[in-house]
Every structure is written in C-alpha cells, then in structure tokens.
Length: 218
Image (tube, rainbow, N blue to C red; front, side, top):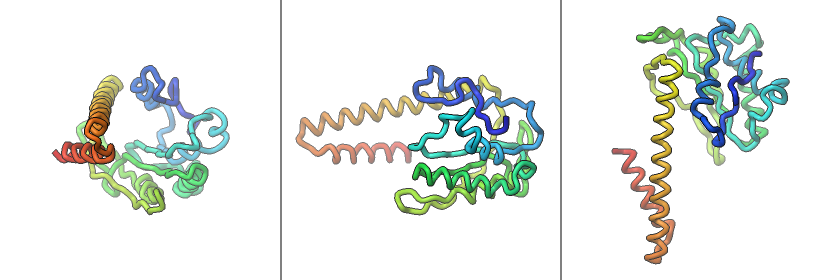
C-alpha cells in the first residue's frame, strides 16, 4: 500500500543486530510499482491515518525530530492522489511539530530545478515540485530562533547496487564509530587531568572543542 513502511524489520534502531543491512533492505523498494512518482502522497499516507496507528504503528515517537527525505529521478505526480500535495505535506509536518514540539521537515534528492541532470548512470528530470515543497517546509524554530531553508550544493550522484551501497555505508559508519571512541577517550583524559590538577572540567572540555575544530578545518 502507498505509504506503508517496508523492510524486516522496518524500523532500524541501535539495538538492531545488522542496522546497515536492515536499512539497505528497507530502502530497496523495487521497480514494480506505479510509473508515476508520488513521494509526497506516500509521505502523507505514511504519517497519517489509518497507517499511523495501523501498519506503521510505532514509527513516530513523540520525542523525536521528523525528517522526511525524498529520493527520485522524476518530479512528483501526487496530484493524481491529492488535491494539493505540497499543502498536504506542510500540514502533516506542522501537525508533527505541534505534537512533539520538535522540528519536522522534508528534504529532496532530485534533479535540478528547471533543467534536471544527467550522468554516467542515467538522467533525472527536474524535481521542481519536490524542491519547492522542501524549501517551503524547511522553515522552523529551534531554541526560539527561526531556521531558514537550507540547500546543499549540487552534487553528482552515482547509482550503485545493494552490495556496494551497504559496504560504503558500513565504512562511513565505522569512521563515525572510530571518531566517537576517540572523543570518548579524550573526555576521559580531560576528566583525569581535571581531577589530578584541580582544574575545572569545563576548561578541559573547551580545549577538546578547540582540538575538534582544528581537526575539522584541517
């Protein structure tokens, strides 16, 4: 059904035995569906009733930020399913923000506005509706400060198979894990130095922040 979350399990958590594999299987939706892309209608259906309390029950958490990401090689055609797809998505995201008190937004990985894009592995038509909807919903307040829309630089996408995708994702997450372990070690060292030298832990934490900033700029 449109909007029903796929995968087994279809919710990936930190307790998953194979989170990378679970995610790869969840996003492998196949090509047997309708030829008309309807990502906006799918998002509205996934987050609304009856799926929210039915097949997708448990996906939305009251204490979690909601970020919907659409990946498509063509523009949205949800107008065959909804009167005003962009407005429907905006309403769903606004309701999610009201219920949780946390940001809810939509991002789009689609063809360039007006022109689309081409590459070694195929073409993508302009994703104008997705782009406009993403820009229109990417405005929220965090810590009582408005957040303006964010647009990433145009990047070249490469189509890869499930095995390569899983391997790339595994390597990237392994890098994140190594960074987390290194940061944890630095935190322990800072606490030890603070206790041994009678220093404030906040001062040592500040030094760690400076080292991280320098490393990111290198």
